[in-house]
Image (cartoon, rainbow, N blue to C red; front, top):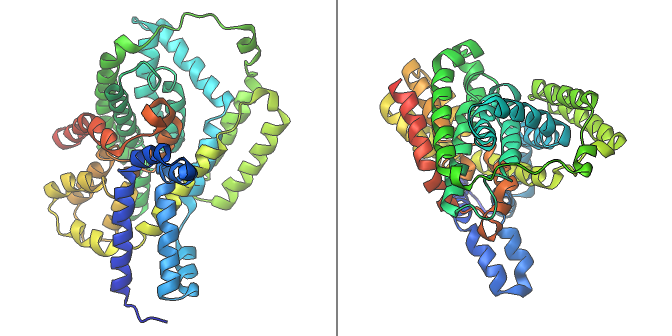
Amino acid sequence: MFPLTADTMQITAAAIFAVALVHTFTVKQFERLSARFPRHAGAFHLLGEVEVVFGFWAIVLVLLMALIQDGASALTYAESRNYTEPLFVFVVMVVAGTRPILQAVQLSVDFIARVAPVRSVLASTWLSFAAIPLLGSLITEPAAMTIAALMLAPRVFRAGVPEPLKYFGLGVLFVNVSIGGTLTSFAAPPVLMVADAWSWNSAFMAKTFGWKAALAVLVNATAAVVLLRKHLADDVAPASPDERLRTVPKTIIAIHIAFLAAVVLLAHHPVAFLALFLMFLGFTQAYERHQDTLILKEALLVAFFLAGLVVIGGMQQWWLEPIVSRMSAGVLFFGAAALTAVTDNAALTYLGSLVKGISDEAKYSLVAGAVAGGGLTVIANAPNPAGVALLRSGFDDGTIGAGGLLLGAMAPTAVALAAFWML
């Protein structure tokens, strides 16, 4: 066995993290390569899937660990990671993306849109950008992302809408979901990581973060609808007989909502929510006529992405923690927002919770900056890969460019930063 110090292994892991990060910004290039080299199109398509990136490089990291150290060390490290969040996101995406859940949300949105004093399509789009992300404080951010993405896909993320506006809409969605989960202490992963350690309950979150986040969400959603209004077609076509037959009975909707609520309540108990998920799969088979195809592929890709981030991110503490611990509260606020572009915001706040003697002001700055920057990149916030998986087909080449997302999220991120810093 080749002698290797822990520091050397950490440097290797940091290098792989950097390569994976660059890979996320170049996925569109792999799609173009698939057209130039059709014999290897399958491999290039695979590497062009943004959800595959961190899972792929996590496997490379574990293989390198096995080759340089030994197989037992590699397996021990991989098995020492906590995969609860990837598993939960997989389950909640599948449950939240079912026809009964979507129909319940659609009916609610349509009812409010009809009584609103504006065009129905404007009201329903605004509610999808604003109300559903805020609902994430109750049903969790991954569920809110899934529902909002599926609601917005046919209206905003489609052919005929200019690409820059799609990226702006995507940035608004990602930022709003990231900050919209801060009204409670259990829905947003970066808050969840520190809630117990710092004794932050839902009342504290609503008073300290929630109302500021809600204001930013409303401003961002309004800006998105104003810019997109000329490209939103009115829904004037009456429902066809086939569509009327697809109406789901209220009992089925209630049972699906009960499954979703139970999964959310058991979010920290993977054995329990996976058992519930198996029961849920059985129920969907028993009442298949009231279901669309489950989004298993999209959810598995997102879970693979997050699991890869858990594996690679677990070896980045050596450089992230010193950076966080040496920042003043003001620098920490903006520094945390910037760091979310290169690491998951939940990992960032978790590392902050390990810093001894951190002040209350620094705690606020860290979490506020981390959630405000949660829309800058795909890896910035755990639900973002779910949004990418569900919306990428509406973009050119069927992929979402990291650079386009970064530019599209700049303005809504600035609004979120201003709300948390100035109010």
